[in-house]
Length: 130
Image (cartoon, rainbow, N blue to C red; front, side, top):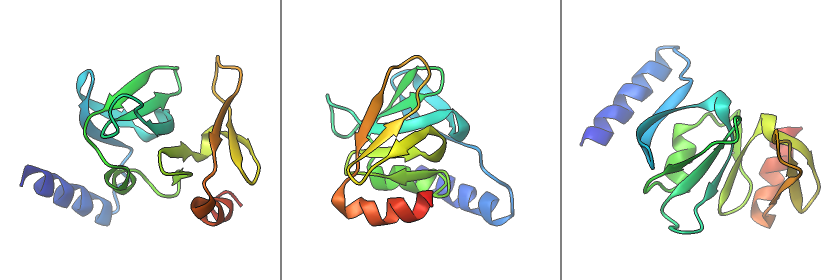
């Protein structure tokens, strides 16, 4: 019920023309506010599939507790983020290059990060980056 109330409030703010720049969720550090511009990519946790790992610009990681990819996609702006396979969502600004099978990410302080591009996500992804 509280979640529905929060979603209704968020929907109202968006429909009123206010641009939302963050979302709030329970993380490994307690309830956290996550700003969209800080997110590079989001992946499913290897430890618990219900949890998602948010990789931030400053090389920090936050673990979102008990959230589905579908729910996460409903919270973040579709123009900035796209699901690229069953487990990963990428930010447009984090993409350095891509091929038919993989996406190379530009992450400060890391040599090379690569995400696989799923067959069923390829068409939507290429239309989104073009």
